[in-house]
Structure formats: structure tokens, C-alpha cells
Image (cartoon, rainbow, N blue to C red; front, side, top):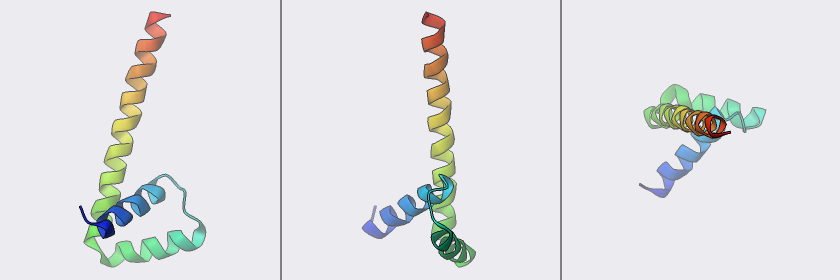
Length: 67
């Protein structure tokens, strides 16, 4: 993966995680209008975030069942 793609993936993750300020959101959303790679990075960030949340839920359930 290229450095450019890494930066785009990190920006997409920050967008999904609501960690961008208003200016960054506007700039990124403008990019999303024209850049398929940016849209794919958002889709990946959403998918990975869902997977992490599901894994944490499994761990929390297993931990509470042991108590």
C-alpha cells in the first residue's frame, strides 16, 4: 500500500470516527464527490469499525459470562 493510500485510509477513518474539524469535513466531503478511492476508503473504514465493535461485543459477552 502506498503512503498516499495510507494517508487517505487514515483520513477516512477519522471521518467515520467523527474526529475531523468542520473545515476538514468539508474538504473531505468535496473529495468524496469526485474520488472513488476516497469513497472506497470510507467503505473500508466503516467495515473495519463494524468488525472491531462486533469483536469487542463478543469479548464483553464472554467476560461477563465468566463472572
